Length: 433
Ligand code: PLP
Image 1: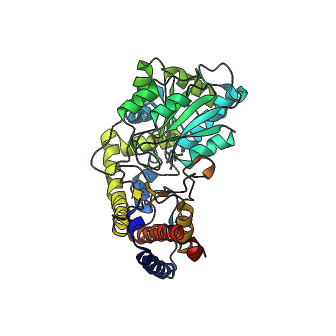
Image 2: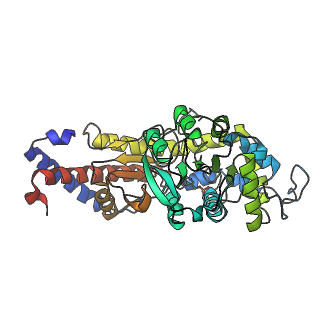
Image 3: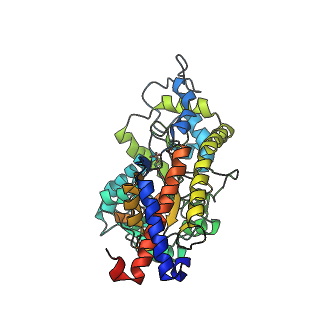
């Protein structure tokens, strides 16, 4: 029951009328603001402008004295692998550096698994009856799109605030058709949650029915902290090895939201056997990655301390935007009991759950008022949220003043949709129009 449920009918109608009037006034401002996708703002991209003149006119030799302009170096430069190995929590020789998109690596790994299988497979995944992945929800829409593209079934699993519901996962994973699970273990997209160590241990030790079951461990927000606390998570490669499943985890990350979103480095890490498998397949599709970009990153970020310093500068730009959204939601909706929202300590998103059956209405109201929101349902496989309640807000891209205005508008839309629904539930005939 929400606080609104206890408001007398006449008061509820008056509040609905007032909120409608406020919404109309907001709509009349004719704004055009976009909070649809988690993109870095121009100020964040500017932080990496120093990279644009690197590696310099004559300075293209690697530490080993090789010419980074040329072909080769499929696994990535040793100095770049050494720089990012601590982020992934493994030795540099278990790291592979690709080109600019970790999503592309995830796509390729799924494609190769479908065509050829992975270490431990008895046949390619396409030859399985009906391969499936577990999808913690709400989740990242592009993960689900990859499954869609390959005809892999997506099975939703609830997230509990510290990772997936492991009782459900342990039950479902006994089915040998279940080949993988998407995990964004730190500052998850979009809930911001951080997987607990107990959850990570259970994932590492899952009683999987498929011998070639994989954790698709997408640590996209590994260094994207919003507070002074740099949250660490348990080391999945160590834990899977300890549990007797050394080849179970494929790790992904990138510098898309560290340096330049369109010109970052994609990172892959895994067991030695999986890395050999990956490189054998990668060798078919490329003669080598962009090593100049790797040199650029090494010379710009230098080491973990440099990387953290750089991310502190991101935090200074981004954290006030998150605060602005939180403040606007609290000011408009606090204490009403109609919506819950996250206060993430890292990552790129705020998740708002309104009353069931209102998310699509909120997105439509926001659109009418010139506010672009991620489509309702995008955080679920197939684009359908069965509860129609989850909104994903991406506050990084617009300027701080724009985020303030957008957050005010979104809060208003959430309230209006909740009031409309509340009023309709009480007097269907009167308010249905
Ligand atoms: N993984 C997650 C969880 C993301 O949220 C995103 C971007 O929003 C990506 C991957 C995309 O990463 P990349 O830019 O490296 O392809």
